[in-house]
Image (tube, rainbow, N blue to C red; front, side):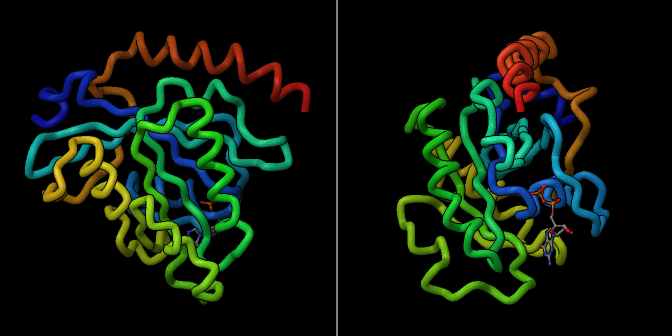
Amino acid sequence: ELKASLSSQDTHKCLLLGDSGVGKTTFLRRHATGHFKDTHKLTKGVQVHTLLLQTNYQDLALELWEVAGDERHGGLCDGYFFFAKCAIIMFDLSVESTALSVARWLRSFERICGKQFPVIVCGNKADLKRMPRQLCYRQQPSFDYCELSARAAWNLEAPLELLSRQLLQRRSLKLISQPIFKPKVGCSFNEDEMQQQMKVVHEIALPELIED
Ligand code: GDP
């Protein structure tokens, strides 16, 4: 059983970052249910999805934190970033401003978590007309980069595979089964640790959110 074999060392907190509207929620829902809902609702608060991944080396769990991406609230609260070991920064291939924001998301992540952790940059909505090539984030060679379409369910596993490669430091790592998102219940990561994290997050995050 995959989940039984995973310890908390194999569980990595990963931030899913990017401007509002780039498709973060859709990406998560795609994996969780195979459904695609065409309504745009601003993410409120934080959602955590634990994704169990089987690879040709070892199994791992990504605890994906999708945090409120509403820039009008002045960005995110630092608390959400605590204890993160990696990040996926998403932008919309058809909207230039979201690509330009990638640098800002990266700065926030590095400021709070440090520079030593893997970051994957991914362009979503590959099914749409892209912004001009010269504006694409592909130009930033220092990060692993991939493109996907949450709508078309195309290349959904690419950021997860790139990230797993970096986390386990295995260049030839491959995912060996299609990942499925599972609810946090029933997964083997430490519930107490999770509660503790949420407590820290809320103590720090809530006053700031209320101020807005
Ligand atoms: P979030 O704010 O980053 O969580 O973005 P959402 O997941 O709510 O998506 C914003 C909008 O983009 C929704 O209307 C989605 O249906 C749409 N969307 C998400 N992914 C794709 C995609 O791959 N292609 C297209 N064409 N639309 C997408």
